[in-house]
Image (tube, rainbow, N blue to C red; front, top):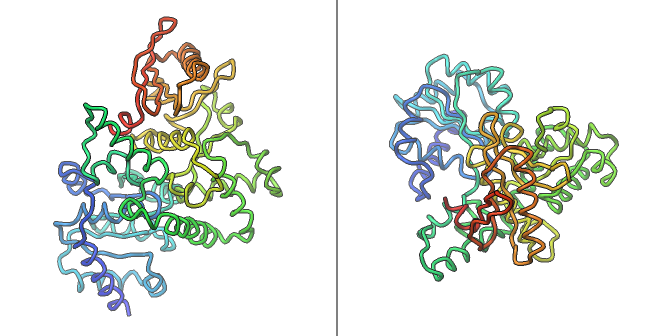
Length: 418
């Protein structure tokens, strides 16, 4: 039985290798990853391109393939038989690609054993906290982690063969047209390739994550409460929340239950939470958090918004882009409230130094709106000793000097395509 399963998966592998994909990793980085004997752990949300990136890494190599999204493989899995059969199906393979490994019970023990046997491993998974926790426990220092997100705006432009360099108003208009679509549709590869399927595809994917990655894995009986919470977060993305507030609004039995469910929703990269910046850890923990969603396409597919809220959509896009640029939640990416309760969307740190403060405002055509954003940046700059102040807008580019502070106004298309 195992042999039949592996031969079927080999056919699947060969078929996937023949397809044309948007290149997401350059040759130098690819060479560097393949050269190391460390486990290559590739994480990210479902359908964001983890498997594709793995195939791009391994395309010219002799590699074996096991897909643990296959119920038959999970049902008949026997590690000795699998290893024996892999050698038959893939003679002299150099790399072993384990796809969606989190579906295999006690997977980290088996991966550790393979590593000790000098197998060069590429491992993918869709559960952030589970993978990180188990890798840290069982495989400390033996792996490097690569996070794959849905397409960035720069990748979408590359897919459409549009240069991000714009020297004429007409070219800027073309790029902003693509950005307008991206802000509403998001960047899941399948929906970028086929926009007409977006609502059906992402609605189904959303349900799949809830059912397969959360309810089934954690054996949740209160399924309606999980749906209620996910719908609430979809409607209130980029807004602040507290656990007590969620408990009251959604009729949860207790705050710990709310905290537990919020953790479940963040593990498969569905909803992510931004913490308020403070030098005191207790203040961070007690303060309200802000919730974001991994891709704007989910908002279009599942939200109850009657018309797009471009300000919030743009803020969500900037948040995900900051994660792509290697800023880590609760470590060097936060929001901030000044002493006078003015909010800064994003505080970005490098080490212990606040590197930049970023505000996102879609429309600053009204003087009152512009003043609000500038005053918040100036006040936060004084409190956090940071002089790199950025205001991301839809289309304004300028440098504004106010009270000896300099604020860069950057059009969203330019900042996102850097």
